[in-house]
Length: 487
Image (cartoon, rainbow, N blue to C red; front, side):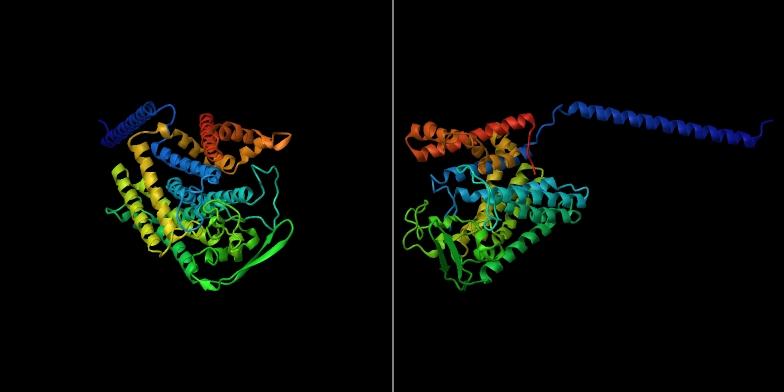
């Protein structure tokens, strides 16, 4: 007769073995199901990863900004109406800098939406900031005299420390740092309501508000004393004195923006050809450049830094508004929801700017980077960005904007080659008998100016076809080859 204990033990072992076998079968089935799903996903994915329309809109806007910069820099001398406003007001050229800062903000939001390691992100932010500062000083510090003068070198006593890339570096550093350090404080899902996007990213707005307070308090409360400067010519040295002794002045001579730069950087390190030289008070040729009037005020000859320290602090607000548009892009998936947020904010900013400007409370002024200027240009950027989004994302009209997208993909390279005239300088380096007899000058004179019998119109057409179209084609070729230069 069998032992009941042994029978129960055998049944238990059999049951365990049966359970183990069932678990193995389930695991095998799960593995097979996972492999089937992975194979299905691979079959559904395209062989070449397509660039998303959202990023295409970003690149197209960035490319538009580069094109505007080349246009106003090289054709502004012929058409003063598109060049920087001599003081109050806003022209086509005055949109370039805030458009850059706006798109920097949008890009930061997209680049830092997922941060695996905060320390690594901070390291990358610091490294990129240093690169921007280096290239800014090299390109705009006075070392290169391209493209007209085939010389290089700068007197360190007169080097210009500020510039476009330096301002972008400061704004990028502050805005990206706040975005990185507040990663764990922001929600992944927004609460219902229009204002939820603002409260979710309150630290970013607090950073922009802090920049606003610093700028406004300094601008309207800092006492600006009398100051002097020296103008050196070939035959003599003349010292001029500017009478100030006031606070809260928003004119060219005695504003706090210029005073801060003179004290921090030194007057010899400021931009020597400020746009206020085209004011009626300075020249009879206004709004174009021309010789100084005999009765021109002394400050007409003085240097002034358009990308100075105090004005760059308020420029942080331009980057803050840009990053808000990026946050909307991340959290709102529907076209109508995104456009509602973007357009409503843009219209509100434009209304505030117009009220401040036409009531003479705070005039729109690029040189001072006034608060009304921030609102006006950020509102315009929001409208243009929304229009690009509708055309490219909603309507799918990507092809007409491909050349802007290509330039936007290689924005830094085209900025260096075109906006800073490094490529024309290289071409001009190959001249025949005289430095005025170069390929660039020959094309300008014979292909454009002489054909149209107008230096003014010839200059504009040269900039459009020999520069902008050329850089668009070059960017397209580099895109096809997969060549990009990014900091």
